[in-house]
Image (cartoon, rainbow, N blue to C red; front, side, top):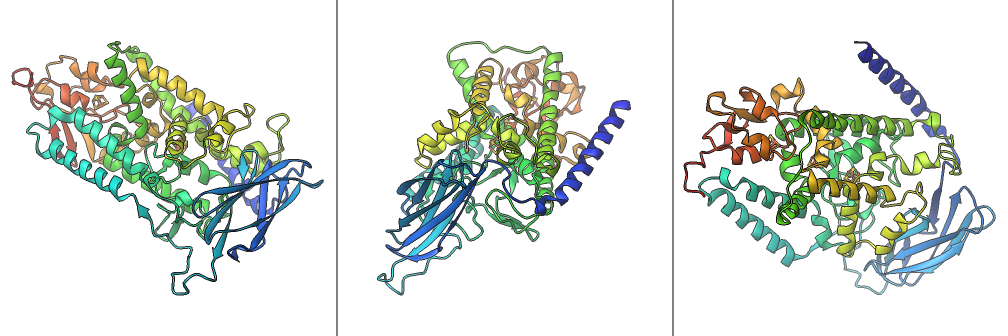
Length: 534
Ligand code: SF4
Ligand code: SF4
Ligand code: SF4
């Protein structure tokens, strides 16, 4: 009781300070950290005309080299290097030699501003369509897209319809679905980006695929999904719910502004949409997202397959420790939210948290999404993006060779270290990260705890009289869930259960375990001991 009171008081005080401090956001002026801002002389120019970029850094250090990258419509680029004057200002002029939309990035260390120029050719056919800021005409890679669509459809037909016993094929079906979703999540990387202009709202090119509106609330970053469908890669088709949660808490309570983006909606409106979507998705499918869709889940499953191939046996945690370990996910989730709120407070915006960094800069520039700075998924996404040629490799290396606290535009040294640790752990302990994943904890909160538990649509049921307590379900479970084995019957879905259905697949007794969707059984265990399957 006492700890609950302390918790309630802390949350109230934190919320009050946050709300009060957020009021002063619009009044803050001047330099709030390592930052770069720039303006372009004109956004509309003719081909072979020049534009001038005037900008400044803050703090206004002299003699700092600024790189200004002018990226042509065909994504080749011109780099110019310029040194700041005594006030930290710089100016650079460039002739734009190709018609179309140019992206211009003034880059200061790992930080950049983004500008655009629409270059027209007066000698071009006057009847040719005039470029606009609307969604561009994408040019899909038809061969790749058709091949993927055909194989996805054929695979689904073979796996679901052509197989008499669906339960027997759960593992293969799951792998197939997981790989299919990786393609869908990163689909934008496989289409032609060359015609993507920077839209009028200054949304980054990688956002134009998913920018949307919900109930009148503008969601330029897209709708959040409860799996690691990361925000960062160029060409993503989903947005990780954790990123939106962290970022919208950052001090946009009233102000509709963000990272180089002028949002038409306020932070509180967007947070409402985020929570609404997450609650709805969690109630309908719960942790099915973890078992069947999340790309990081697939990554860990592949590591387990590698271990199996090498004939190395997995290790298990004690049941007691595993349960306590699982609670860590909620602690991490709470920490993420508290840190996001803290770093969003104006009250500490002008303090110098880390010695020798700029006042408030550390907070404002990098920690609006604190978890993303350590997230193990980010290096995988960035490597994928680099491998398809949508990110210059040097951006990755630049980001990871800075000072420990100098967090990169894309990656931090911490991201890499955490990924290495998680990968090693996953080799010995199946789905090790999923046991403490804050996103998994978020889904569990809205699907496995009252009142959401009472209305969640997807659940694992056990028929008590058909279970012989053989213990197979407990042994095969990748997150060492014990509830399926220990509970007598009825709903045995626990907060740690990924709904991977490995237990349903391996349970050797007919109808002892069932997957029910809205009360209807969609899969059930079968007696493979007496069948001719093996
Ligand atoms: S870095 Fe991780 S937490 Fe952040 S958006 Fe990407 S997947 Fe989500
Ligand atoms: S627990 Fe986290 S990492 Fe694991 S599958 Fe779910 S969202 Fe992905
Ligand atoms: S209890 Fe069953 S469905 Fe849940 S994670 Fe374990 S094996 Fe998968």
